[in-house]
Length: 108
Image 1 (tube, rainbow, N blue to C red):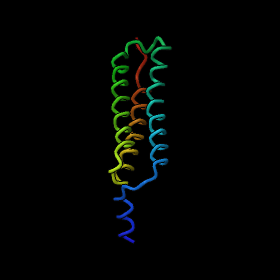
Image 2: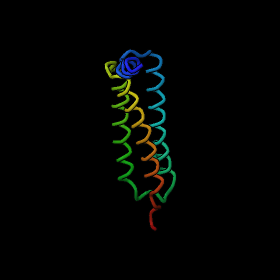
Image 3: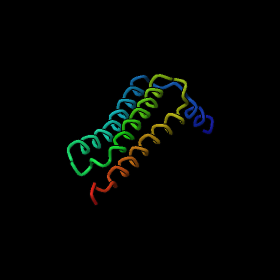
């Protein structure tokens, strides 16, 4: 039982289609969070004082794309590390959205 669990967690053998689908889903989710902010920034005049957050979101998105690209191209990552990286990306995006939507409108 323990050998089966440890061999599954340390396995680097996983289907290419699953790898592709999970990376596409992560790119869609992380890009969606940033695109929502860009849409709000460019359509609402109350967000004009948050230009520094706009630059932060560009850096945020670039770093996430690099990590997701690493997950897609490098196949030597053990399963437990892949799962942990995917969970960290998803949790970080939730916190990034919390941060964005906690910003006060300009002029208050």
